[in-house]
Image (cartoon, rainbow, N blue to C red; front, top):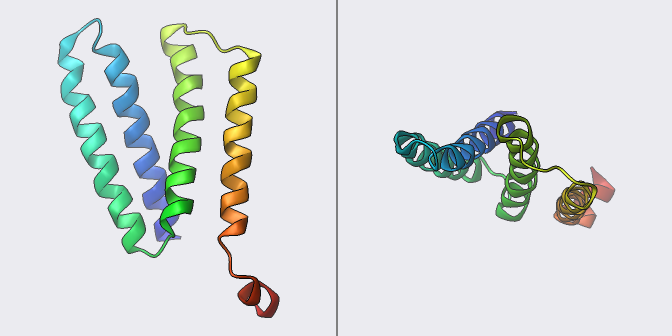
Length: 113
């Protein structure tokens, strides 16, 4: 459970950093939040890996959910377009991450467990 909470926090701080990067186009003070967000995200991702989550799974989920959350939030906050091809692309990313997640489990462990 701990590794999932850490991963959620890593995603939230990365999305915050990325949205702040967009906000910094209008006000450069947001760059402080960008740096804090990205540093916190990488520190939290290191903690996720130390907690035992496989790197492919952690990075895939981090990237997919981060991409989806950033696109939705940018649409709401900044009025950026959220088109059906964008939604389809995000869906494909999430589907790919699910395949990585399911493929990362050992067959023998799944059969015996």
